Length: 50
Image (cartoon, rainbow, N blue to C red; front, top):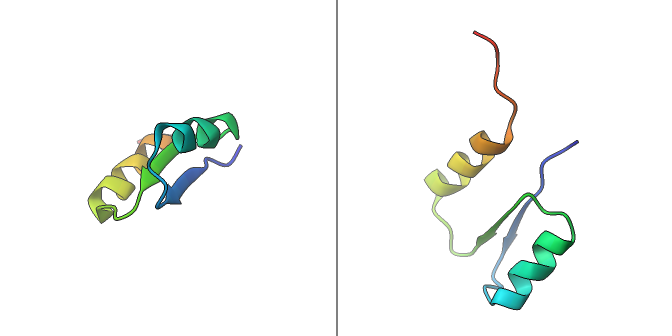
């Protein structure tokens, strides 16, 4: 499975519900902070064995 993060300017509750209903793993609205995006990406990626 490939994680999906929706990046959009639509920030209404209905828009978020539709995003998650379309099987997005996360939903981030514009403007977004790059650190926030990286944090969400790291959360969704599989952990590497050390």
